[in-house]
Image 1 (tube, rainbow, N blue to C red):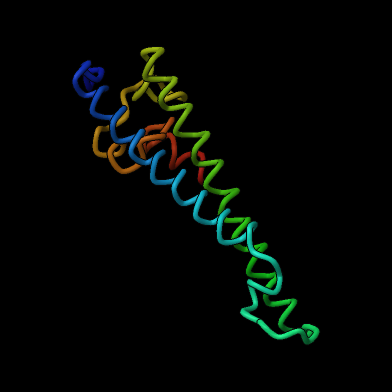
Image 2: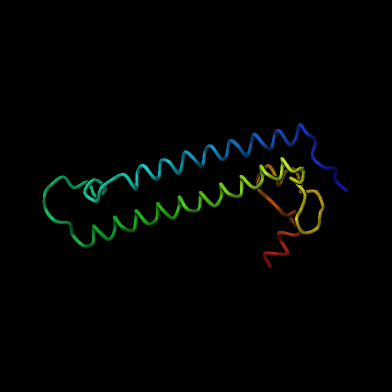
Length: 126
């Protein structure tokens, strides 16, 4: 049986999670600035006074929807990271929610918001 994480290891994971949160917040801000603050004319690069071609408008709308979808996924990931920080504070970070065994440190380094060990995750994905 593997040991629980030490306070030093928990602090290390807390830093990793916070760094990822900062990166995602920057990404969301960048996407929002690029997508939501531009007018249709700015987004298309059109500086003339002519009307838009329907295909150009459709492409611009698709790009805008795609960017907003990315921001939405980032927000979900942020929620998972916040939940991982909460588990650190509560003292149950790194413990599998299904079997109660410790989650491997290598898994937590790759997926710091992981709630399940590899075996339990594999079972859920089948």
